Image 1: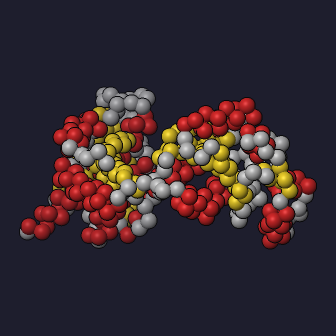
Image 2: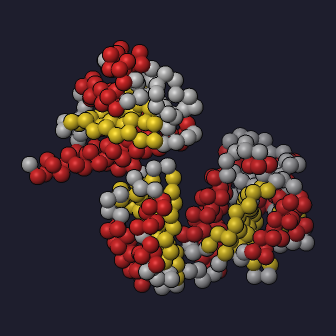
Image 3: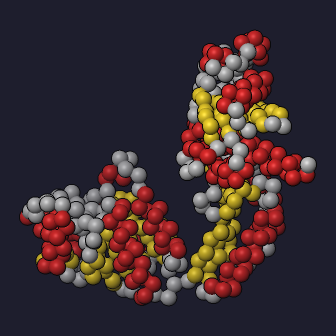
Length: 421
C-alpha cells in the first residue's frame, strides 16, 4: 500500500517551524509495510487543500493530513474536508464532555470557541484525542482512506499510535518491511558504491541497497520487502554479513543510533581511557558532538577552544617561535597542540585541530579548507593534513567527523598493540 502525507500550515512554508511530523509519520508507516509515495506541505488555503487531497487520492491508498484543526478562523482543514466529502458538521456530545474534562484538570474555562471542536463531520469515524481538543478524523471513499490529525506533534503521535496504526493493521493485509543500516566512515559515496557494484547486482529482487551520504560518512541501508517474514529476514541477515565483509575497514556500527561519536564513547568507556580536546578551526564542534552522547563524563576530562595564537601560546604553551616559523595552520602546531593538551589534562588521548575554515585565510599561507588534525597518545602523535573545500560549515563538520574517525583508528590500533605485547 502507498500513502501520501500532507502537512498543512503557513508556518511550515515560511520556515517558522520545521516539519518533523512527516519524518516521524513516514517511519511509523514504513514499519507496518506502508510505502510513502509523496510528502507535501501546503498552505492554510481552501483551494490548495482541496487540490492536494484530490491529487493524493489519485496517487495513494492512504492519505494522512496533519494541521489546521484548531478552533480559530485560520484553521480551515475540517471545513474543507466537509466540502470535499459532501458532508456536514454535527455536534458530538462525547467530544464536548472530553474537552470539558481536559479543561477541568487544568482549571481552564470552556468557551463557545472551544465548543467548535465538538462540531465534527458526520461521515467520519472520530478518534478521541486524549492529549488535546482536536479530534482525529478517519474518512473512507472508493476504497481509499483519508485521515486528518492535529499538527501538534505529541497529539498527532498519540493518535497515530493508539488509533490509526492499529486500525490499518486490522483492516489491511500489509507486506513485511525490514531495514538494516550499516554506518561507514572515511570513504566517499562513489568510492563505496564502486566497491559494492558486484554485491549490489547480486542482491535478490526483494532486497534493495541505498546509499545515504553526509559529511564524512555513508550509511548503507538494506531494505527487504515481501510477504514471508521468516525467509525475508534470513535473506536480509545473510546479505548484511556479506556487506560487512566488503566494508570491514570503514564499518563502525549498525542501525540509526550508531555514529562516530557514539562509537568513540563506547571505546573509551569500555577501555576506561580518557580524552582531552583542543580545537581551533572547529570551534568546539568536536566537544559538542562528544558531550551530546550520554556517558561522556566517564572519559572526557576537558576541552579548550584555542582559537587565537595568543591562547595557543599562553594557555596551551605552544611555542611562539614554532607558530612564527610554521604559522598556526601547520602540522607542527597541530602536533604541539595535541601534545600539550594531553599533558595539561593528563589524559590517555588528545585531539587537536587547526586550519582555515574560511571565508578568509587570516595571516596564514594555507588556503581555505586546509585543516591539520593531530591525535596524541602514549604511542606518540599522529597528524594528517586535509583539504575540505568550502563553505565554512562544511569544513567544520567534515573536520570534526574526521578527527573522531582518526581517534577511533588510534584507539583500535593501540588496543591491538597492547593485546600482542
